[in-house]
Image (cartoon, rainbow, N blue to C red):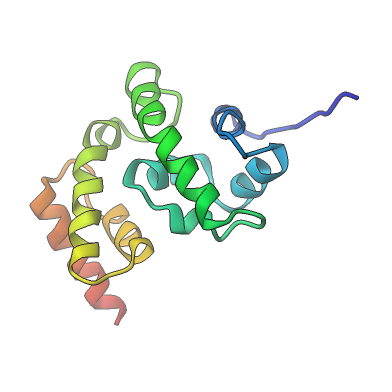
Length: 144
């Protein structure tokens, strides 16, 4: 039996291939994730360790989401920096570590992983960790 999958962007195809390479993730689950979030947001979720956002997709539980983040974290960072697979700005490629650190700091301060990731995603990607935390705090304060 032959199965055919179509994607509107090349980045989605790359994400799909990476997702199905994770143990326990099949084509149906991969398509579910990519129908809920775009390739750029997926890359950001993995880079910042935001498995909670992935669980919002149908059929993706916490364990699978954590496995996706764990198995793809290094892969996405390396592939993005080396070959530019994802269409994220280059600052995000270089500052994924800063973003992850800023998200971790906000989580320590009591915000959820999802809230922290969304707040840091709005920050300037070229900013330092401290500046990202400040911008994230401002974004979170404006929501409440």
